Structures are given as structure tokens and as C-alpha cells.
Image (tube, rainbow, N blue to C red; front, side, top):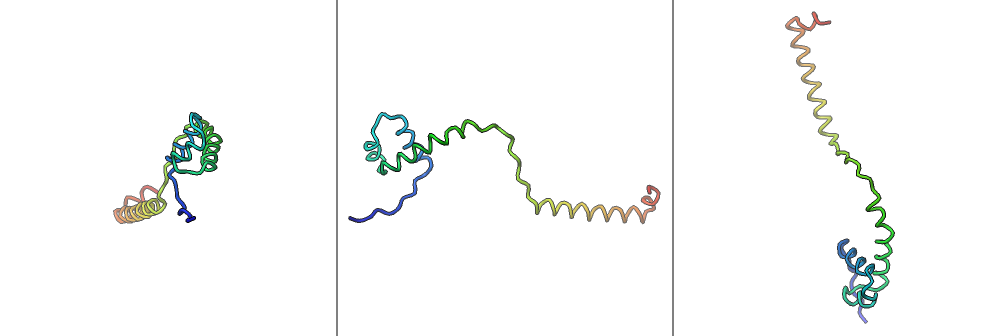
Length: 101
């Protein structure tokens, strides 16, 4: 008997099969034949769905923290420092900066 190549199922497919098993209107054997998956695999996906479903509804809606690009911030800091130094030198030459100190 030839072995079948290992298959990777999508999360949507796993959820569909697990929900069908959770509904219970068909036996594991019927579901296994319909979806071409081993009954033990269906049982595993069903248990995962039962155990993790509380996590889905239990999360609080926290605002998402935006990811900050560090390189962009460092570039902006460098640009502002350069402008600050340039303007400070220009004000000193114009005689306006020494009056402020």
C-alpha cells in the first residue's frame, strides 16, 4: 500500500470540519469520508476548537499599538538636529541668538 503525501490543511478547512463535528449530525466516520481526513484528526481539531473558543470571545478590545519604524524616527531626529544647528548658527551670525541668551 502506497503512503499518501503529507497534506497541510488551511485553518478555514480545519474550522469547517471541526464545526461539522461539533454540530454532531454526522458520525466521525461520515465526516472523515466526506472531507477525506482521518477521524482522529477530526477529533483533534474539534478539541482544539472547544478549548480555544473561549479565547476568541474572552479577549478585551484593546486599541492596537501602531508599530513604529525606528529607522524613520532616527532619520527624522538627524534631520531636525541638522536644521537646529543650521538655524542656531544663522541666528548667531545675525546677532539674534546672543541677545536671547
